[in-house]
Image (cartoon, rainbow over all chains, first blue to last red; front, side, top):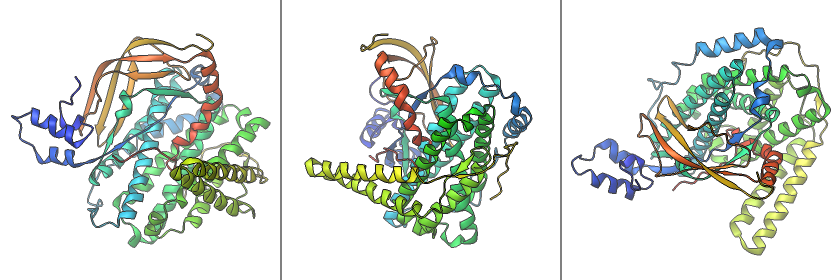
Amino acid sequence: MNKPSHSAFAKTAEEALAAQDALDAEPMTSEMATEVAMQNTLLTPRFYTTDFDEMDAIDVTPVRDDWDTLIAQMKADPNNGHFKKNEDWDSVDWDGMEPKLKAEFIDFLISSCTAEFSGCVLYKEMKRRGSNSDITTLFQLMARDEARHAGFINDALREAGIRVNLGFLTQKKKYTYFRPKFIYYATYLSEKIGYARYITIFRHLEANPEHRFHPIFKWFREWCNDEFSHGEAFALLMKTDPKLTESFTNKLWIKFFLTAVYSTMWVRDHQRPVFHDALGVDTTWYGQEVFRKTSEISKQVFPFTLDIDHPRWVPMLNKMEAASRQVAKGKEEGGIGGTATRVVGMAKAAYCFISLLTIPAVHHKVPESTRLEPAY
Amino acid sequence: MGLLTRSTETAPCEVTISHRFEELSAHVKFLNGAVVNPGDSVMVHGAEIMAPYGEIVSEERTATITRASWLEQQWTRWTGDFEFMELCEFSFSEEVLS
């Protein structure tokens, strides 16, 4: 079967119409017409493998009580009824939205959807490959949440006339590798920083509702509570093996991950100025506020936090952002001149990253029990 | 596994897509127990698959697994970790609006 048999399977509007023509008997419904008129966006998740035997060997006995409580809470699924569109979902005037804002906001929705989708693929794979029931139960529950979030964002995208395309499924895809401990550091941080980002926007819009230009923000609080509990699970996993957060090498890795995640967020957010303006959020304030919350939370398991008040911190982040713009400009220009611009930009970014990485960290004593509840 | 050479094999697989409000997900499961290792590539044959909105579809297909060479596998093991940023909501994604 080479031609799509249904318009919804089609890659392009032409294909969809052709598929529709083939089904002469069936008249075009308005639903199909909507489907045909939609723009496509290709999701590009990554595919991972890891050392499944090592993950399977995790013994949660040292944190059993906290673990069982958390899993029971996730199984009870308090957010089951949350992801529904009710009367709070006001209609959105997509056509009246300023084009730049629309573009940045849609980019925000698509990257959120991709991240949820990638998380879901990763968690599901671990669930499938593992045999330790503590671990597989956790990953199954997390995959459930991520797929639910992705579905919710997908619906918001569809309202904006954008259809996700899962064409990657039938394209050649390479599997990369993630060491288990890196999965803990990276997913722990991405879940906790996700919580801090969403709750900061939610609280800001609670105080300034006139800036809420799309109803999806009203869902952010319960949504980010899912992220929060996923982070809790990874904190407990790290607690099962003290070496993960205490050995010299691992501390260096943690510092690397913190610096990489914080600086990427800074660069990326500063490249969505219109989106943040519309929210009435100062991007620099927002970045620092998110780092502050994430650092405070991460004290539960990491033995230090980054010194975000260091005199070098903000200036270096800004320089890194400028370097990233230079790289993008070089790429766009192409040719020898463009390549030179790009390489110089990359060198500048690397210099900034090293400068950030060498800011002395702020050490503290990690508490015995890690468990936290969302408090912001 | 060759030091520098790749090999290929085929495996039956099941592709499941949920394209619903309550769940957007897609998974590929090998039906013969084949396991993918670092650096391997997977290609599912046939036309593009997509569930109409509101539905789940599941299709059996054939996939070709290209096994990485030993060197490629080691390389992936050492460098794969740096792709972690993809999991963050603010990551740089390569999506293209067509």
